[in-house]
Image (cartoon, rainbow, N blue to C red; front, side):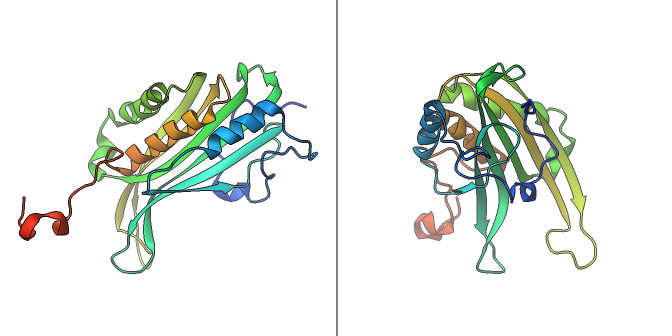
Amino acid sequence: MCYPAAYPACVEPTSLANAGNRGRDTGGDEPPAEFRAALDALASVRVRPEIVLEQIPAPQRLAPFAHAVAARVGEPDPDGDDDFEIANARFIVLYDPEGHDAWKGTTRCVGYLSAATDEELVDDTMFSEVAWSWLTEALAEAGAGHHAVGGTVTRTASTRFGDLAGPEHSVDVEMRASWTAEDAALDRHLQAWLDVLGNAAGLPPPGVRLLGPSDRIGGETL
């Protein structure tokens, strides 16, 4: 059977609803040891508190075995009890024990993210290059061995009219990327993608907390 070389760019979150489960292929075969080791590595990832991570159905027909997780970043909604989502992402692992010519390996990592950003950035010609560098630098810093990396960065500006909920003007950045992992240490690859999500969402570096009014001594303005 022939499987696509990369996760299709046109696939949206709703298209995953009828996908497989927990990395098994459509025939229900037990995953190979290498893939099980990769899943164990993913389960060991510790997520920063601003990010919510959960397993989602994995896509079918793209590889014999697959696994997928979703992540979101929210901030308190001043007009309600629920958080207001400012960024979301998906991280998908495709595994073919026989290897794939286009992947140049057996394990393909696929990432998608969308985040609200500043309006000024939509006209910044360097923004796409900077956003792409978030991924390449995160993979290097995480020690995630990889090759055959590729993807796109897209900026969109939207204006809402009438009764449509949400801000009148908004600018979003979308990133779609895929790369081949060189070993089963996929925790490093997922951690790198979550770092990219944090950058896109404007989160401070891990361990750094921005000061709010209640943190300032005597309520003084800095």
